[in-house]
Length: 66
View 1: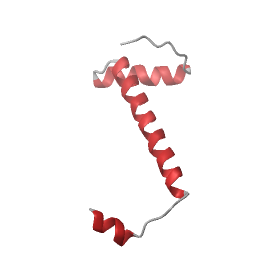
View 2 (view 1 turned 45 degrees about the vertical axis):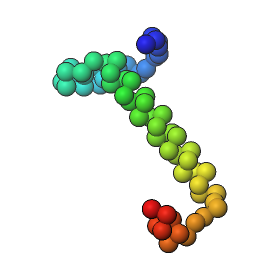
View 3 (view 1 turned 90 degrees about the horizontal axis):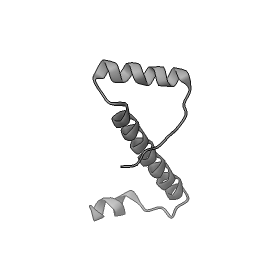
Protein backbone atom coordinates (compact mmCIF):
# COMPACT_ATOMS: atom_id res chain seq x y z
CA UNK A 1 0.00 0.00 0.00
CA UNK A 2 1.02 3.58 -0.55
CA UNK A 3 -0.15 6.82 1.01
CA UNK A 4 -1.94 9.39 -1.17
CA UNK A 5 -2.47 12.95 -0.02
CA UNK A 6 -5.26 14.97 -1.58
CA UNK A 7 -7.42 17.99 -0.95
CA UNK A 8 -11.21 18.10 -1.11
CA UNK A 9 -13.97 20.57 -0.45
CA UNK A 10 -14.93 20.86 3.19
CA UNK A 11 -18.57 19.89 2.58
CA UNK A 12 -17.49 16.74 0.74
CA UNK A 13 -15.19 15.81 3.63
CA UNK A 14 -18.01 16.34 6.11
CA UNK A 15 -20.31 14.12 4.03
CA UNK A 16 -17.60 11.43 3.89
CA UNK A 17 -17.07 11.64 7.66
CA UNK A 18 -20.81 11.34 8.32
CA UNK A 19 -21.29 8.47 5.86
CA UNK A 20 -18.40 6.47 7.29
CA UNK A 21 -19.59 7.02 10.85
CA UNK A 22 -23.17 6.00 10.04
CA UNK A 23 -22.12 2.85 8.22
CA UNK A 24 -19.14 1.85 10.33
CA UNK A 25 -16.71 2.16 7.44
CA UNK A 26 -13.13 3.35 7.21
CA UNK A 27 -12.52 6.37 4.99
CA UNK A 28 -9.60 4.60 3.33
CA UNK A 29 -11.86 1.75 2.21
CA UNK A 30 -14.56 4.11 0.93
CA UNK A 31 -12.06 6.27 -0.97
CA UNK A 32 -10.28 3.25 -2.47
CA UNK A 33 -13.55 1.66 -3.60
CA UNK A 34 -14.85 4.95 -5.01
CA UNK A 35 -11.65 5.58 -6.97
CA UNK A 36 -11.54 2.02 -8.31
CA UNK A 37 -15.16 2.33 -9.41
CA UNK A 38 -14.53 5.69 -11.08
CA UNK A 39 -11.51 4.33 -12.96
CA UNK A 40 -13.49 1.30 -14.15
CA UNK A 41 -16.30 3.56 -15.35
CA UNK A 42 -13.79 5.74 -17.21
CA UNK A 43 -12.34 2.67 -18.96
CA UNK A 44 -15.83 1.48 -19.89
CA UNK A 45 -16.69 4.91 -21.30
CA UNK A 46 -13.52 4.96 -23.39
CA UNK A 47 -14.39 1.53 -24.79
CA UNK A 48 -17.94 2.63 -25.60
CA UNK A 49 -16.67 5.74 -27.37
CA UNK A 50 -14.19 3.72 -29.43
CA UNK A 51 -16.87 1.24 -30.45
CA UNK A 52 -19.24 4.00 -31.57
CA UNK A 53 -16.82 4.72 -34.40
CA UNK A 54 -17.37 1.22 -35.85
CA UNK A 55 -16.95 -1.11 -37.56
CA UNK A 56 -20.33 -2.51 -36.66
CA UNK A 57 -21.44 -6.12 -36.58
CA UNK A 58 -24.94 -7.34 -37.22
CA UNK A 59 -26.69 -8.55 -34.05
CA UNK A 60 -27.48 -11.89 -35.69
CA UNK A 61 -23.75 -12.46 -36.30
CA UNK A 62 -22.84 -11.54 -32.72
CA UNK A 63 -25.62 -13.70 -31.30
CA UNK A 64 -24.44 -16.69 -33.31
CA UNK A 65 -20.96 -16.41 -31.77
CA UNK A 66 -22.34 -16.73 -28.23
